[in-house]
Image 1 (cartoon, rainbow, N blue to C red):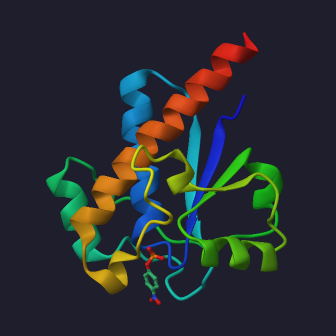
Image 2: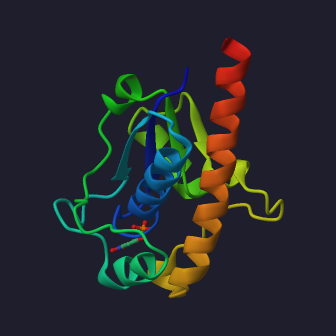
Length: 154
Ligand code: 4NP
């Protein structure tokens, strides 16, 4: 069963920590036991908490990101996680440069919004709430897929 999931974006201060916290909250609601983490392909923000405007937007929807700290992906993440979930195609290319190309998926592959091809980076778009709404939708779809595959394995 897929129960260790790493969310990845560029800086690990906006999209992937939000994906981690949102998915953790939704997994808890469903009673699913999964290990979640997040990391960035870049190294600029290592050790930093999520970006303040992202934290504010998350708090407004009931998610607390304050305890999270940024880290960079490492090649050992390939063994440590069953699934690596990227926010956009650039993340996938950058992951490959770190030797991580197996069991990598786009978060939007799980979106019910079929038109979504990536999670736009709110650090640049400034649409933090829009990113959150899409992340919530993708998290629901990801957990649905996990539950379906767990059901098939039984
Ligand atoms: P994220 O957003 O990849 O969603 O964490 C970014 C945050 C910071 C930077 C890039 C992306 N940056 O270049 O500092």
